[in-house]
Image (cartoon, helix red, strand yellow):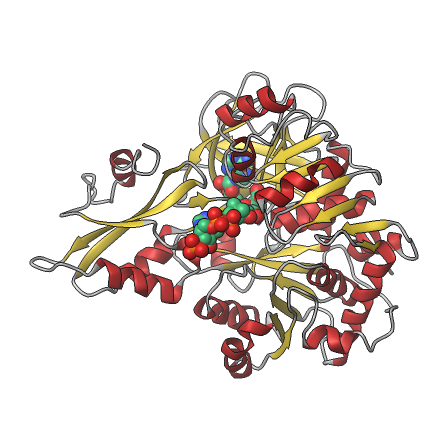
Length: 504
Ligand code: MCA
Ligand code: AMP
């Protein structure tokens, strides 16, 4: 027996003194140094009573130890559940309860808030701070730096990543070892990653992009990462000359282009810039090439599927497209009503199938059945078209979703909070263009007859419940919402009406 994910991402680096993480203070953590920490954490988790298949929920700042926690889970056969650091106590409480996590790891600053929640839900609370201190590592440091890897099958679950839904309730996407590993190996091959690569890593590690795409691809290839806590423009510009590759959301690239220090010379040592998580404007692609001589490689993925398509490494990286289905991924465009496959050139819903596609939503069989067909095709909710040369273009969404700076926001979740406000009849939350975040959140509020809702109070109610990145940038009062003859709210009309609100 073996443990494919651990063996092929981590285990193969055992005993190597090669650099793995270049840190903000310019210190270096080797592969072996990293694996030693992961083994120590695995001991702590197992000694606290965890057994294979148990869930570890982590809401922690990005650090080498936070990444080692992921490796520790893989090694001990535990399911890793990373959580956005912006989530509020309300949001966390749902994730912990829904997943049945038996250990919760949080930043020391949040332990007072989370302790009662964890206690109520029967989970053990450990702390892990950005500097690596806290209860988890203080126990870990006492442990041996080797841990007997737990046997796992490729079909065993490795991670839960929560993704919101159009009904407002988040769903835990169950990802297997094979889902993660197959995608990492494909991407490393397609993007020509080797042990010589140094990836500039400024993404958060609680979502697919930073954790599975960026980190797993580097690990599988044996490369190293400049591991930065967040995207800080000055730091990214300073460290770029040490890197060979970078992955980012479009906001990273527009921010770089907005700075005169970002020049062709600064990017001269780079071989690859990858963009994803949100649409990269063709204009950004063109401007980037003009400035640096590099064509950004755009790819397309989802939490439920990892990466589905990619522009070619060699060959034309076509602006405004997400390239071709990756090897091993089948992609078809279907009629959203009938599910029938449409001919190339026609716009329809994107469906994908392959080893990358998740197992389903944790304890939500109906939601799984609604999105994952029996034949294995996953209905992405994205609208796309395949052009004459086979490039896939995403032209819209068949789901009510806003993507702000690469973070997904489901309007329903915000509408449910706003609708509860005093004097509010109904609300509609929409995404409108934003120069930095691509899209941002706008809330339209319709008062009950004769009432004037207090918009500040509404905003406070949202702040109390939902993560900062979900907060509307603005709330607007209107008399009524535009509706079609069936009575359905026409958000497209609202989007057109407020299209220029943040860009003009
Ligand atoms: C921060 N804020 C945001 C966002 N990020 N508001 C809306 N959208 C956001 N994305 C808040 C901050 O809390 C702050 O609030 C204010 O907005 C401005 O913050 P700023 O300093 O400008 O932001 P930042 O800290 O520099 O962060 C922006 C960022 C970051 C670097 C773009 O959001 C980021 O790293 N995004 C990457 C997201 C990502 O990894 N997505 C991948 C998901 P205040 O003013 O109150 O302090 S995986 C995925 O989508 C699929 C699978 C895929 O294909 O990859
Ligand atoms: P998430 O649920 O966070 O995994 O986000 C997945 C969604 O992000 C997809 O369904 C798309 O709508 C969007 N997405 C990811 N990559 C791209 C891209 N390159 N272009 C357009 N949309 C993208």
